[in-house]
Image 1 (spheres, rainbow, N blue to C red):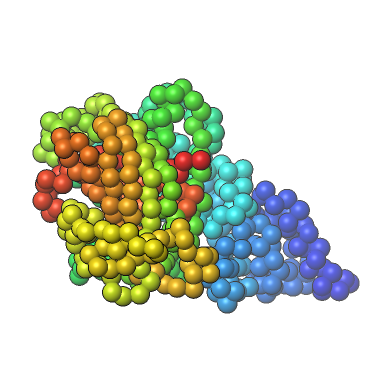
Image 2 (cartoon, rainbow, N blue to C red):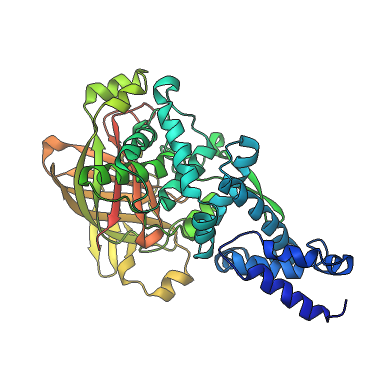
Length: 468
């Protein structure tokens, strides 16, 4: 070898990273073929440091380093991840639908979405062309609905739906394509009897034995085996369904969902929650004015669904959408005592609780809660939140209402009671997740409060975004 090793390594790095829009470092191949000595020095088996540098130049590492710590992202692990990601992105780019090849590729893309700081998105969109793969994947499922009925409630479907609603390209889908796609999204969104919104039953405030181990997918990440558990498909499907439906109604272009999947989503997916509310909720993230829509259909139609009617009924039945808005105020407890677990159908709070204002927040049944809006950033970061409740007022085409809710510490499920001021409109229980923290989307389902919690009730979907 006539060149000093460090010079040769810098040349190899420059060749491999000259074009960061291409995942595989293919420009490095001629140098590797130069001679045996060069190949031995620059091979991925012997020079992990070089390939770790190449990985960091092509893929996002800032978020994963902050979440996992530098010690988890070793040179060996980054080299292994570079090889894996290049192979998997190539499979998507080559339009493969062979399950053994494409399933691990989709999970790699899903993790890249969670880690995205810009580089990952560019590779997924511009190199792998993942939007084209996803479009054909969901068109195939949507087109088979009348023949095959309800699609399976699989983790792979969930990962693909998360990718779809985060990466569909603006203006890329024609109206006829959207009309086909919306059928599958609609089934996942409103089919509560087939597709739950959470892994832990919404009726449980704390984990019970039957839900201690939610379904998960084992993957390799940075050379280690980890388990992934994305939120059920009903959540991203509702985001996609209502986004597509609005685009069709308004004859407007379909834009990607502006959601930065933050640390709370990472914690949920990687099972890092441990019933710790601070890991699934950012203090103050529910504070403010929210607006959006809820869906519903005729009760007799929904009753037919619960009795086992074909999925075609959902496909061919119109679901109405009504606009609504509310202003939420968030209150927190940092230390015990906190309120006992209340009525399931009343958002885990006491029925008709006594609520009084205090100089620092509110008092519910004798327990003091601090107003999140008045806390300093130092307070929010220093103290571990133990309990979160929300109060507020809003309005829809059905009239004015009050809201009262609580955040479940296991996974951040937000439950709130929507109580119309007009007696004939009743009370409705909303359950969902805040996706994307303070700048994200509250999405999930509502249901009646007359049916017992262990029975299937009358339900619909909803989505709310922060008013800009």
